[in-house]
Length: 369
Image (tube, rainbow, N blue to C red; front, side):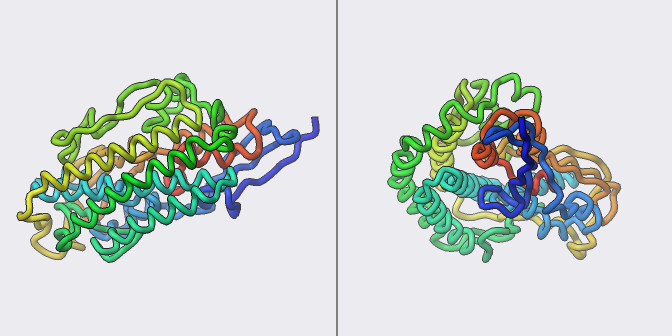
């Protein structure tokens, strides 16, 4: 056997983010894989302990760039629990709208990204272009396309722009027409089937060993475990939706579940817009003085939301001062993006490494936090 060491990333078109996997290969078969994080490391957790409570709002969205709103939500929920803040009814509905729009956006990105390692670039162009139109709506909402800083402790920054919900509904109607085309192009394509069917398997025992949640878990064990259902936050208990599951977790099955989740997110968005009150406050004051000098009562809390990749949590400790004493992030893609690569990429082909990153939903900053 003649092993050769290859480097996938950090500057490789098949790598998701600034990350690297060192692969020892024999021919095109991976014999050993060693994930090498650190290329993106910004010390997010320690930085949050050196910034004022409100000052962290500009930092936390960067812990997962494609889905920044989950960070905003989980941070706001934790701070509100510590400070005993009750946010207005309309703020709950707006938060749900933003979170589901973000879920649609990242699933479109993930479905399109499968075109890179498989050579089906039409999928990339279609899905990313559609996602870009959704980012236009975020820009109208808050002035930013990527880092929104819109969900804040106490509610949301401001009310929805006039006519915004009509534009969101129009986008959902457009997606109703587009998603079947994505299904035909991606899920029924012979190349995609050849590369993803019975490949990148995630058996049930591996799910429990690594602590994988989200689509990775639901596709392997058939369990409808979704924090929006089992531990509802915002007003998720006031809307109807299903949690898609399967019992055979190959890459193709996970792609199928992402499409099915798209439909459920669109279903939630329509209900949110229908049930959201037209008037009412969208935030409450959290400080009687300077927001930057705001102090949060001493205590500790673990808050969690259901991101597109699974359970996303913050453990926050306050000592009653102007800055957090400790913050630890439970990145949803950490198990499959770090431990999973090292233990289970062995035996796959070189070109499957990029498929692992995409179909497992690995978001690099969650590891380099």
